[in-house]
Image (cartoon, rainbow, N blue to C red; front, side, top):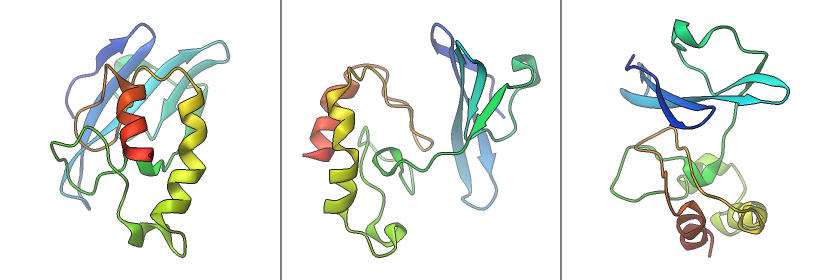
Length: 124
């Protein structure tokens, strides 16, 4: 496990080796009004303490089967079962109505600036 780093106030990201995927994957902890929330936590650093909530997420826009130079991209269509990339894009377009600053992917580096622009590019 690499050390945790604060990417914004109250938002911590760490990476852990995923044996099945043979790569480092990211997890996130965020302080909310409802307490500490771990998102997709793999081997969380002990210094973060015990979460009040744990959320497991599969968000296609952040999924990358292997880290690439693309800031974000859609997951492979084969991961979607009977759904298509067009259906995935349509289901995620509501994110463009929000003021997105960051996109925290589990594969590759997080997008810490211009998240809205990168989301728009992948969802258009």
